[in-house]
Length: 246
Ligand SMILES: [Zn+2]
Image (tube, rainbow, N blue to C red; front, side):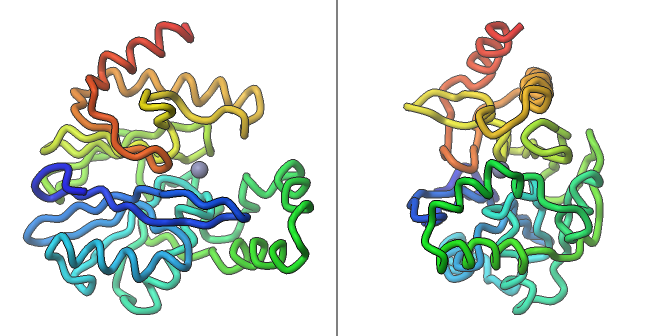
């Protein structure tokens, strides 16, 4: 779906642990650079290619993959892209780098996750664990809070810890779009914060705190990775849920 000139919200089908859903990576480009934000699962490659073609940008022109955070549905597709395009640069927040490179254990691979996958048939369990095992890739460049990337009309990196330690959101200046990753979500048509059910009490608190950072930006569109687009006065809605939590 076209958000504005040079920014497209992709819609990819995903099947994770027997549950079908849609995920929404973002694609941004200008004459010199094209950037994919989050890369889906290993099976996402054909869909990413065709979405880029629909936006009239050949897949071979992809320069950068910016990863909002380490979760498998965001990084699982990187390796397949790099197998075809070895020059693509992978960028992520400095705190997320050791997880994405496989030097630290993914935060989601905790005991409650293992309990959940125990219910799956053995073959499915293996598939899920293999996906985690195969996911690590090298991060070529790290990003910091408030960093400005001059490409694609200007992108601001916003460190929004909570969901994971190095979670980032990206603000695309030209289109006033906040690419929220998993820091925000859309539920029954309404913009909400991150899903705190997955998090410890402390991480949930950190995640709620991170939401305050969005108030500094003039936002017309929010792209959430699991809920898609929200463009119904996001600034107003963000203030509303921040005041409620305060
Ligand atoms: Zn996530």
